[in-house]
Image 1 (cartoon, rainbow, N blue to C red):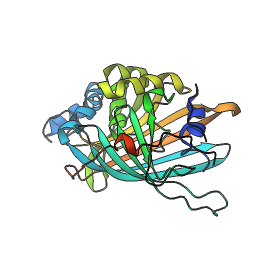
Image 2 (tube, rainbow, N blue to C red):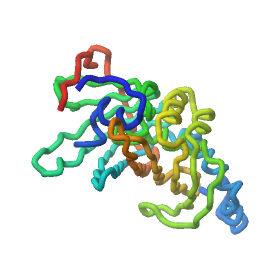
Image 3 (cartoon, rainbow, N blue to C red):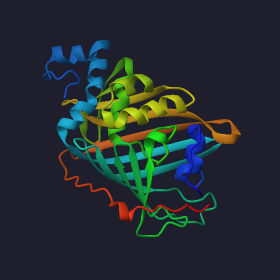
Image 4 (cartoon, one colour):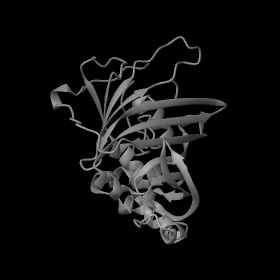
Length: 280
């Protein structure tokens, strides 16, 4: 397949990368009763969500697991990823596992993805790419901003989306992977998130605001007592290329083991494949 750009997020997912289809207290207070009551207010909920990306930067790094579920025409596929993320340099490394073909006859090798501001690097991409080469995609040119194209939402971008929250509801206390968290629910506006995003994320989010079927993204976010995201689930919607069908995508990011080493190094220019990607 040839790497090319399209005006719709669905077309990008199908033809540009070829991964996704087919194939603390929230308010920064102590744990007192007063702080707990304050966390339930709409204002406190929005403030906590707006701060989530900055809190991750202060945390430095973590391990991450991702899950992306797509449903269209009665077909559902799930793509999973696992790796580490450096929030200060906004660099991540994920090993992304593709689902089997419907017949179960084809085993896909995991794809290594490196996430960077404005760029996505993939190794073991296949389809004519030499085994020792990386494919680089400029995420600012993708009409979904790489929120779904790579089969995983960049963990920092997932946090930055919460800058676009105007209203949110405090659902209550629960646990995520053994950590006590506060559960918030609401809708994020991608365009608003782009205006408040860091320089490396701004252009990608602006592209996504135009490329999806709607810029309104429902979410559920789970923050620990330090305000760190432990889990966030976004529900995206886009129109799938020529078929004009709406594709629903649920992207879940789980963050844990904060402070874990996250030494992510981007490939040298000589290691990046510059040829055409063959059709699969």
